[in-house]
Amino acid sequence: MSAEIISGTEMRAAILDELRVEVTKMKEQHGVVPGLVTILVGANPASLSYVTLKVKTALGLGFHEIQDDQPEDITEEALLQLIDKYNNDNSIHGILVQLPLPKHINEEKIINAIDPGKDVDGFHPVNLGRMVLGDRDGFLPCTPYGIQEMIIRSGTETSGAETVVVGRSNIVGKPISIMMGQKGEGANSTVTMVHTRTQDLEAHCKRADILIVAAGVPGLVKPEWIKAGATVIDVGVNRIGMSDSGKAILSGDVAFDEAKQIAGKITPVPGGVGPMTIAMLMKNTVKSAKKHIEKA
Ligand code: NAD
Image (cartoon, rainbow, N blue to C red; front, side, top):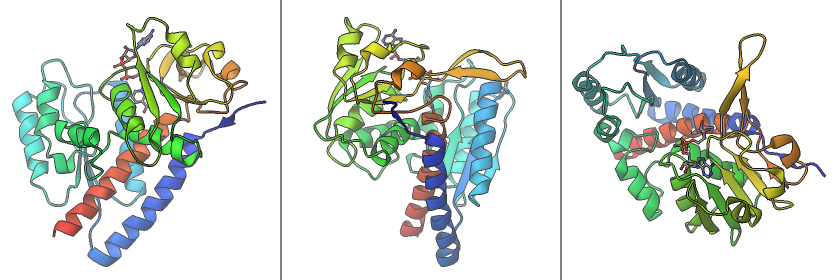
C-alpha cells in the first residue's frame, strides 16, 4: 500500500488562511498590522530565493513588510546598528536576518543582538532556552516548529511513540529532538537523536514510529530502514542536478519512491517541510504582534 503523502504545500495554505483571519481581526480591532523586516546581506542565489518567498508571503498576508537588503561588504558594526534600529521600531514585530552571513560577520553576535521579543526565527539563545524549558511563550525555531505542526496535522500519534531524529544541527536536529520529547501536544515521544558518530544508523531508524531526517545527504535513509507504517518527515533539501530549463532538481534524504511503499505517511521534497518553515515564520510574526498588543 502506498503511504499517505503529507503535503506541506496544502498545510501551508491552511495555516496562511488561518493567519489571514487573525491579521484582519487585529487590524479591525486594534489598528495593528504585523510588521516583519527581512535583512538579506549580499546576493547568495539560494538566500535571495528564500527571502523573496518570505517577502511575498508576508505581503500576501497584509503584513507591513520591509525588505532591507544590504551589500555583501556591510560591516558588522553597521549591521548591528541596523538591528538596533529595528529593535526600537514599534511598527516592527519580527526581525529576520537571512543566514548564512558573509565570513567577515560573526553570525552569533548578530543573532544575539536581535531583541528576543522580535526573534521570529527562534534562533536567539533566550528563545532556544525557553524551548528547552517547554515555555511556549517564546518563539520556536521555524523548521522544527513546522515539522511538529505537520506531525500534529497529519494525525500521527506521538505519545509513547519511538521518534528517531537523524541529525543534530542547532537549527533542525537538536531542537526537534527536544521538542518531540517534551510534554504536550505532538510530543511525549521517546526520542533518539543519531548523527555521524552513531554506530548503527540502520538499527535505530528501523525502530522508529516517527522518523525525522535532517542530514543533507541525498538517499541516506534506505527504504529497508523504514518500519512499516512509520511517519517519515524528510527535511533534507539537496540540489542533485539541473533541469533542461535551468531549474535545480531537488531531492530529500530519503529514497522517496521506494519509501512511500513502506511508510504509513511521508513528506515529499519539494513540497514538504520547506513550505511549512515559511508558514511558521509568519505564525511567529503574528504571535509577536499579538504580544505587542497585549503589552500596549
Ligand atoms: P547540518 O549540515 O548543519 O547538519 C546535518 C546533521 O546531519 C549533522 O548533525 C550530522 O551529524 C548529521 N549527518 C550528516 N551526515 C550523516 C550521516 N551520513 N549519518 C548520520 N548523520 C549524518 O544541516 P541542517 O542545517 O540541519 O540541514 C539538514 C538538511 O535539511 C539540509 O539538506 C538542509 O538543506 C535541510 N533544511 C531544510 C529546511 C527546510 O525548511 N526544508 C530547513 C533547514 C534545513
